[in-house]
Image 1 (cartoon, rainbow, N blue to C red):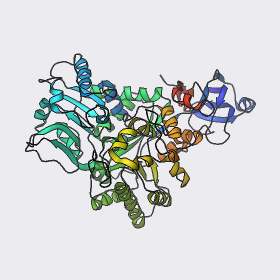
Image 2 (image 1 turned 45 degrees about the vertical axis):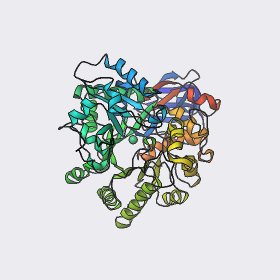
Image 3 (image 1 turned 135 degrees about the vertical axis):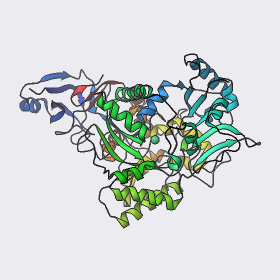
Image 4 (image 1 turned 90 degrees about the vertical axis):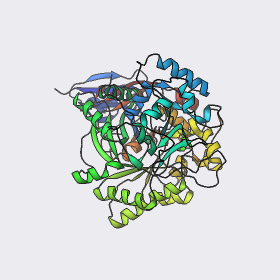
Length: 534
Ligand SMILES: [Zn+2]
C-alpha cells in the first residue's frame, strides 16, 4: 500500500492559496490534501503522522539559476572567498597544497579582487609562483568567469606573449606583452587541455580538466549542499557535455536527489538542431529545459558591458557576440522550441537580448515561452517596461548585492543603485524570481530573501532601497516563481494537491520572525517526493 503521511504541528505556508494551513496529506510522492487537520484525516485511508514540532513547513525551494557541479568543484578546492590580501591567498593555497599530491594542480575558488587591498587588481602568475614553481596553480575568480594561473600552468597551456586573445576573451599582459596570469571568459578554453571542454565565445569556461570519479564526487557534494539548504529543484544554467554526462551518471546510479532542469550552453546549438532535440525531453527529475546564452561578462568581475560613464577602475567590459551573431543564436534556439536564458548585465547587453527576443517572436510567434535574462544587473526603466511587454523573465541574485554591492559601486558608480532591481520588476508587473547562481553566492535561501528585502551589503550600506521587495514576494521568488521560470509550476513550487511532495522544514517562520533573524533561519529537513533527503 502506498504510504500516506500527514504533516502538522507547526506553521505550514503553501505559498499559493491560503497563507497558512494546519495540515498536509501526502500519498506516495504526491500531495493529496492541504487544509485543516480534520480535512486531511477525512481524506486519508490510514497514515503516518509527521510532527513538525513547531517548525515551519514550506515548499521545497526552487533555485532557478545554479551550477551544482561547479559548486561541488569549488567546495573541493581551497576556499579563497574570505581572503583579504594576496599574501593570504598564497598562504591558503600553500596550506591546501599540502594535501595535493605532487604533480597535481593546486586549485582555489572565490577570490574577489575588490577585497584584496590591491587597488582592485587581480593576483598574478608571479604571486601564485610563490605557492608552487613546479605544479600548476589555478584560482577561479568569485564570478566563475576566469582564473589567475601560475607560470607552470601558463606554460602547460602554451600561453605566451605570442598567443592571440580569443574573441570574447581576456588575457592580461604586462608592458612586455607577456601574460600576467589573468585569463578570463572565452580565453579559458586555453586552460582545459587538448581533450577538454571547449566553448569558444559562448561563455566562460568553468571546466578545468578532472577525472570522471572526481567529477562524480563533486556533483554529489554540490547536490548535498543544495539539499541541505532546502533546495529540491534547480536550473543548471550552463550544461556542456561535462555536466550532461555527470547528471546522467548520477541518475543512473540512483543518486539524484534534486530535480534538475538543464540549460544547454549555446555552443551545443548545432548539435541540438542536428539531433532534433526538443525542450520537452526528460522527466520530473532530469530534463532538458532550454538553451543558455551569454552576452556580456560578469558583473562581479567588473566585466559587465557598461562602456561609458563609469569610474576609472572600470574596464569597458566585454561582449561575447556582436548583435547579429547573438540575434541569430537566440533566434535558432527559439525556432527549435526552446526557452532561452541569456546572461546579460549592462544595459547594452540587456537591450541585445530584448531585441533578439522581439525579433525571434516576430518571425516565429510562440506563446508562454518565458525567455529569461539571467542576472539582469543594470536594466533601465524603459527596458523593464519592454521586458514586461515581451513577457521576458529576469532571474537576478539578491545575495550578490550583499556580497559584491560595494565592489560593484567602485566599478560601475551610480548605476549600482539599480543593481538587480527586483522591486522595480515587481512594480512593472514582472514576476520576481530569486536565485543564487551557486557557487557565485552560496546556496543560502534565507540570506538571499533577506538581501532582497533589505538591499543591505555586508558592511551594512543600503543599495537602491526602491529595488527591495517584501518577504512574501521574496519567498515566492524562491518557490513558485522559481518554478515558473523553469516551466515546472504544475509540479513544484507550492504545497498544493497534485504536486510533488517536496518540502523544506525550517526552524522559524520567515514571514513572521524578526527581519534580522531571517538570514539565521536553519533548514531542519528537506523532503523530496514524500521522503526525507539524506
Ligand atoms: Zn551562472
